[in-house]
Length: 250
Ligand code: PEP
Image (tube, rainbow, N blue to C red):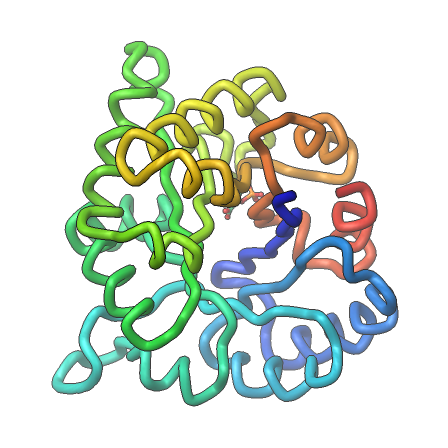
């Protein structure tokens, strides 16, 4: 049985004050929920306070990115040692916004994943096709390329610490959700590709989240699909009263 994982990617939203307000409310709302894994990825500046505030709860704290070196002259980058020191639970790697605006490639995604795992950090690896690629009918080619590049040299043992987030770029922050059928088809393709690359058992166990305009109204339908094991949620995770509805429905 794969445990559902609902993660909120806050991107460049919510100040420290807003993060504290959110967590005070959210901690009460999630009390007693342990059959679904859930967490938030606030901005870097909020991580230490967020991590402190969730002590004694099941709330996971994720980082939105990480650099692939331990330390050195890399102004403004965040190292795995810094995240490990805070006991951060997961690192999101390869989000489409990182790929689109900050030059992330499958190669740098792979470097980051290896470095995170080397330091005992779990990973949420994001992949997904653009609207143009979907319209050209090359969705599966793109997903396979991102999987093969991002997961190059990753072993079955290491895959136990990796969650894959399927996020069609055209559905992120646009209000356009993939239909449950489209999302399921792509998540099944991802699982089959992992099976070919790393093995059947790994593919059966790896959790695949769907991301792209997930909201309370579409959660049940999407999460009800065989190969969808959770969600990476942007906009709808910023307010505790909305995010809790997604968790409850999952
Ligand atoms: C995301 O940021 O990963 C995302 C899916 O955003 P949204 O839910 O706002 O589309």
